Image (cartoon, rainbow, N blue to C red; front, side):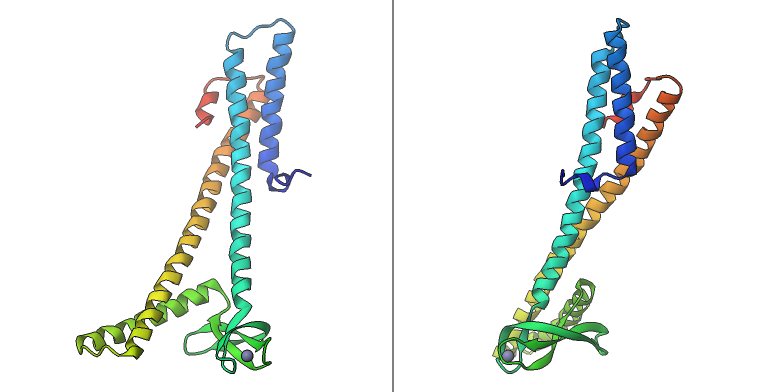
Length: 221
Ligand SMILES: [Zn+2]
């Protein structure tokens, strides 16, 4: 089966059926000797409309893949945690979840696959909670770093905090960028859905009224 097939919804299928119906009518009229001086142009416009429908379907597939990717990245990262016994970032198995009341985020309870230690993975288990944690670290440690810098107290600990805050800023930006891309794609699909419903209704009216072709090219943009 064509892997795109599952992304065609009722509007796509109805629109394509109507476009193909109108193409067929034009071709039949040509064959029967009833020449339309704008035949070529009309066929080109109808083919362009078919392309538009396909583009929208491809966008829907892209959005689906993006969402899948976000989900699988999260799952992959939840498979690791800083084990307090191994003192390193280890492979872990998720066995439950726990709320960090102070930060109001949900974290996984995990078992280190190397040593069997059970602990709470401090990294929250959803992207929205992770953003909350990054924001908390940036705000609280960012202020501390500023205060220490003013006192010229540049210790190794401070350096570690600076790296932590910079790391959180980068992770936060990367996640926000992923969400922006997803949102833009979703908005584009919604906008083209409205345009496509208009097109479908226009083609349906044209079919019911026996082909009124005026302004069809306004849909090709
Ligand atoms: Zn361990």
